[in-house]
Length: 460
Image (tube, rainbow, N blue to C red; front, side, top):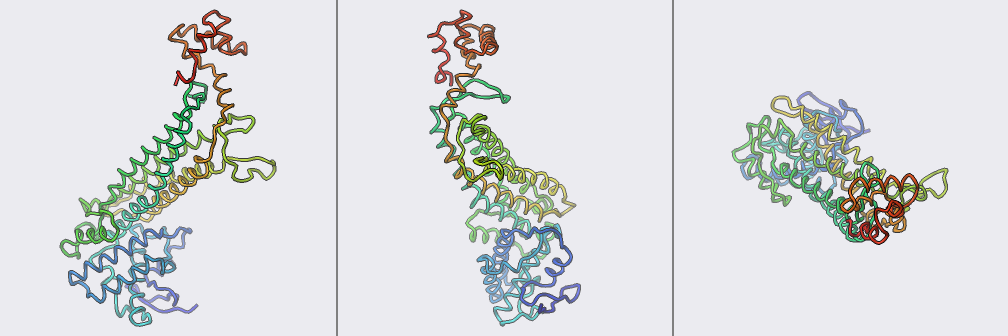
């Protein structure tokens, strides 16, 4: 492998000649050979937006030249277009401040800018320096949390919320489709009074709507950016007004209303806004898990279960049992939900680990929440497309189960009282006869009155 030499404050180090990173990145690669979890690309693209905005602001404030800014911005555009993805190799498992990733992008920008200008990389940063130009007026300590907030907010807006909206609309449609289909309700996994399948699906609809509203409230905190705080919140080495100007630049480039953090010290030492978002993601995951459980049980069978609905047959379900079909979409969804919920615990621990002026678990926080957003988006889209939109009620089973339910007796209590109604239910169950036969044999009701009182349409 051909290498080139470059140096940092610790001295010279060999780097693959075809890579644009520098010494800090190479040292991180060699010192943190842990796992297989690269820094999410959303963080890299957000960092490119931050570096481009900083170049514009620093040029306006005469802290770098217009030529230097132009080349920095040009490379940042390449990064956001995905042209330099191979040059961001670092792991989540690195310094908790994310400094290595901040320096990774600083080094790539500096080396690529020199390459664009001169056709080669000297290894001495003869044109643009990672720290003195690309990182001007910044610190890893304010850049990384800014990138985390931006990436979480934009991914939620662009991917997750549209997926949840589609799922909510599909559930609402099925609720209307099923409004006149009556079935046995269940509490404690036991028979209860009737409801319509439309009412059952209306609960699912509201769960998603409520979770979405909670998420929308939570991500508002992500609009506050730490940029301008520099190392510990004082803004040392950043020009006056840098935070405000940077947020204005980032708002213009992204179309989102980012603003300076109310308290820069809190923005560096605490990651409560990120944790609040993760909590909302976990809440939605628990709701999806519950909805999927209900649909799994309703679709159980097909001969010896409830089979109140027919689930779509998407692939063979067994390597030994011919013709078996399983609720695979639900199982995948619930495993993903479990992963998301586990991230809530990890992120809670991570948020505790702010020591004095800096949280030092930021890469983990970012990776957890970004993966949670991707998973939630994907399972919501897959669930609504593959299951919710295609499942069908099995009317004959719904009707038969409803007619067998002893809890229809509840509608008799206003007329004959609780004790007599309970006697009818016990008599029917003990003798294996219908409620109607039990009521008539006990001389509590005639046939016509029983039918009027136990009409499911009137009961729901």
